[in-house]
Length: 485
Image (tube, rainbow, N blue to C red; front, side, top):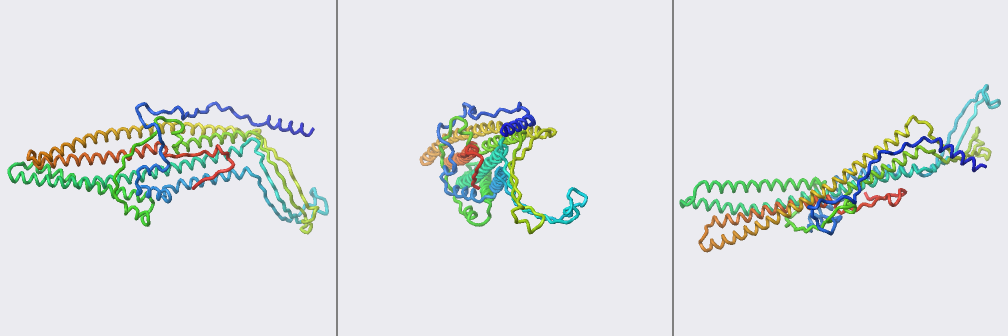
């Protein structure tokens, strides 16, 4: 009989719940498996960016700068602090799911009315009342409201982690760009100094030809102008090197100490040719490497959990409570067995009419989910665009490098011919100097293209996620979470 009454009470409670409006406007989420590169973007068939992708450049100086920045750069402090805030919110939600035990104690002195409900001798007299008790509460969470709230908080933790990984990648990429720009400045300055010496020799040759009546002043002025332009380029490169060094100092977040000495001790290093090996098509496995896309996906999942929590608010909230304590109107009798109080039982809270508050809360959660899905879908297309554009730039620079190498070989052949004709007396010194300067000019162009290729390789690596491998804690459940800050 008691069981039938309980079932009847629960049925009436469920029947009295506020109705949940249907979800008719959910946006479809973009399927990563359908994402592909354009046919004219050709990448290699195997290989992925490694997590420590910068080591592929085989430069110990670059390795030291990036590893130092990742361990202590202020650029990561904000992202790390956001992880801490998300973890605090997760801990708060997780704690609400567990039981709660409170200890309460109070003492009061009260005069009871002589004309009230309490007859004499209580009525008309003063009495002290002392109460000491322990209360326990446990929310049964029958509808999974707290579990959904925990999952939503965990989704934000995972999103913050992915954002931290993205900040690490962007920091490493910026350091690599500035470092290679500095190295390129040094290499070009050495080559331009050699060009200046050749141009100075050409100016002297023009002066001798004019003195012997074999040249004109315009040729001499043109040679001097060319010399001035070369010296101007060297001055610009010197400024570039200093600018890149200070950019590295800011990224490292230091002005003194070991990192500053590491900057001061940087030495020129010849750029390494990098045959890249990247996937030939896009898909979930590739796009999952993007931390920013992972962050967007986790926020969508968190929004789904928020909707579940909002829907659970439409159902009865059952709280199991218990209390044990002592209550006496005289302090001396407080510890006697007759002063014991005991209570245990469930408490039921049922939403019947709330002027549309629950419906508005659920509608807001659904709207936020749709907004996040729309952002996620746009991020998917942005990722494909980034990879395609970065891949196209790598291809373009490689094509230019191939043509430049052909021009360099042709220039070197002309220089060999000029040297041979000079020895045979069939060409003058100016012809040989111009041929050698043409070779140096091609070398300078090659250095610029090599720097563009390094920058394009870095952009493509970041576009591919930089070897990031995130693991969702949703798969492991929402009861525990660990993080590395």
